Structures are given as C-alpha cells and as structure tokens.
Image 1 (cartoon, rainbow, N blue to C red):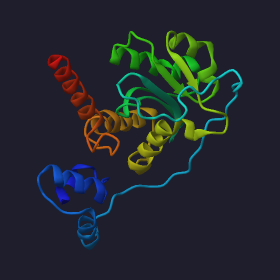
Image 2 (image 1 turned 180 degrees about the vertical axis):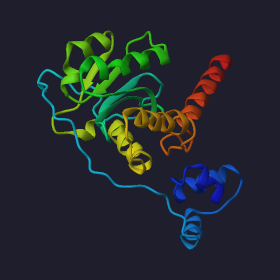
Image 3 (image 1 turned 135 degrees about the horizontal axis):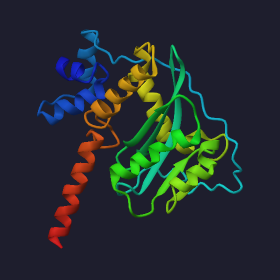
Image 4 (image 1 turned 30 degrees about the vertical axis):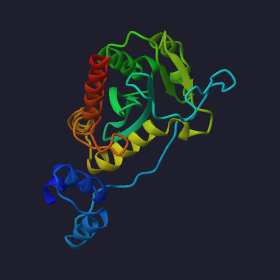
Length: 243
C-alpha cells in the first residue's frame, strides 16, 4: 500500500489504492484501506487553488454548443476539447494551453507561452493533429475566448466541427477545466518557479511522465489514458478479426 502511494507521488487516495490492490489480487474494501491509511497518517497531498475562468468575447448566438456536455464519446479522436490556464513564475504569468481527447481524457497536445496571442497558444492544435495523425473531421470544443473565435483558430481547425461553451457556463467544458485544476492541485502548486523553463519542465513531467502514462482514472476503469487507448485498439482488432 505504501509503495502504491509513493509511486503515485503521494497523490492517490483510498479509492485508487483499493483498485490497484484488487488488480494485484489483494482483496479488501475501500473503507478498510481508508482506515489503514488513516491509522498510518497516509493521505493524498494536494493544495487547493482558486478557479479563474476566461472572459468571453464571442457571440453565443453564432457559436453553437454541439457537445452539450456529452463527455463520453465511444471512440478516440471523435471529440477533443481545449482550454487555457495560467501559471505563476518569478518572470510573470505564463500560459498552458492543452488539448484533451475526451474518450480517454488523454492530453494529446499542449504548449506553454508567455502571452495569450492566438498564433502561439493555438500551436497546440497542430501538435495534437500531428501526434494523432488526424485526417478525418472531429468535434473540437472550447470556450468563447478571443483565441477560439479568431481566424487563426478557424484555420487550424478547418474540417473540424467547432463547438463552444455557452457564456458563463464553464461546466460546458468541464473535463479540460478539471484537468487544469488537477495539474495545479497535484503538481504545480507544490513548486515555486523562477522561470518559464522551470514551469515547462514540471508540466512536461506531469503530463508526459505521469498523467497520460501512469495516473489511473475512474473514467478509464482505473487505467491510465495510455492503457485505456491501448486496450481499445486491442478490442477493435479482435472484433475485426472475428468478423
């Protein structure tokens, strides 16, 4: 139990630790695991932070919400969502823009920039398309921030169906909002960054070295996003061979 806790960078609570124990053939209910953790003074570390949402300048009469809070697509690369959050450094605020595949909650593209200029923050769209080898159109959801209503965004998402949160409804984009809260609570808030380079290194370690590859998600049946997508491909291949 202690090893699982430490391997998670001391982030897992009793629900996730219980699931991992079950995968290793060790039975026990969550309540029992919680009691042992409490007795040993083992608890997930996290720091709360204030939620700040982007001010919208779009026209919601023209920008439609195609997603409608349907956050569980049946296949990878059928729905992406994207958003921007801020990170403090001694050099000033820097900005993390992320693209998430809603099927697995995997972060398929991200960039860190010194400002919120559309041309820079939207480079994450190109990164996501290259990583995923996207050729077919898909739905991409965002808020109505100026970056996502710009000509730059329209160019980078050409062939995709653009979906937008309603004004004043951050929960329309809840999954990516939740991820940005998570990375701060579990990782960023434990650092004091002097430079953007330091912040970018920490974000890389979290996304590429932990969140996508190791961190288990209840949405993914307590698998990591990478495992979840790998199993999807295996099952798809088996179904094709069967037919």
